Length: 223
Ligand SMILES: [Zn+2]
Image (tube, rainbow, N blue to C red):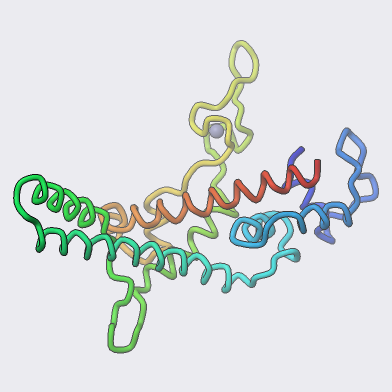
């Protein structure tokens, strides 16, 4: 069963009187909405609604972006805290193994560090790339790019019949390119690659994982 197609039936413009034909499970709108009620509230459910049934979302688009921005800030703070631990370890080492361990901690924390979250400490003004990143990740999650190799079908023709598309491995969608992401973030492409790809990829994976869990919960509830 495709959760999205099921949920899309809740949109007024999609209401049909012939649903149930063609092997689609005969669930009523009430059943579908009740199944959605079984999906734990949070980021995954919000993304699921935004994809398939926007009226069912609890949060506005702005609040959803804010939720992702909060995720970025927490992760940024965690990485800064690891950086501080590394610096303290280097300051307090007792030579030998303790020094090597401290240097490793510091090196890893330094490599994992993200750019400043707050651009202007005096006013608390955020580095504008992070809010733009939160919006772009919502977009990439709910409106993924169709795979150009298979036109979004996930399959291509071959001499032995249809086969799974190599480019998207059957998903039908592919990641946004660096050019597109950089444009949304308001940075040049080389800056995206060098500086912003790591936080972007982290947030996209986080959002994708949450969406996947919510989709599974919806599948179980509607089964
Ligand atoms: Zn494909």
